[in-house]
Length: 297
Ligand SMILES: [Zn+2]
Image (cartoon, rainbow, N blue to C red; front, top):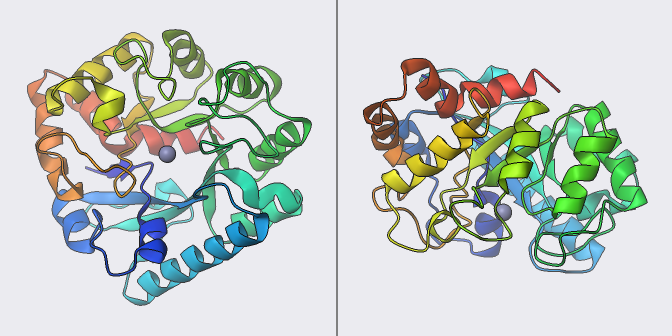
């Protein structure tokens, strides 16, 4: 089985809190049977562009350091192999593209394969969920999205507002993904996707990685059962073969009970089986759906 995770903030933690233990360790990834771990370069709090660029350089250096310790980079999710751990770069907050469209190709060469248009603050591309729902992509945002699509970088709508989400769906040819998002019908939070958004995203050929953050999953106790309710709902919205994991490890201060780090994936896989999903659905959610999504770019 290939287990893939569409989002973790480990690189940011390594450079901003060096020495602090991270959720992701090679031991835990191996124990959990993870084949592909996406590592986001996260923009952090609003800052001048020069500082953001410096931060990204430091995260890239940290990744090079991990590679020197034997971590293996994947340049496409199809490189995921059962029994081995590989790492793919993404971007969370596209401020670094504000220098111009040519920067997109530079990050693509470094192996960046997905990029979230915004984090939780407005940038030159678009407006996040927490500012307003209605503003569409900015003209530069639309150009940048089209360039990302041309370069086969998956456009990530997690954190983006609804106006931007629908501009990507309606004005551009390639389906986006939500790398770490949950269902608004089950937990009313602006970070979560509405049923309307989920249906439209799935019918366009998009993908949703379920975020493990309890505050996005429920207002009560959070266990594997809570995640199962979200997976059930995603399937009802048309998500068969188009949903998976977007843990947000190293970006969330609380975790579901029994799902503290990647070493706990086997228990989650067993919970999916125990819930009655057939083996095809389990392997799709575990990782095959993310890999096949990249085939649609
Ligand atoms: Zn995030």
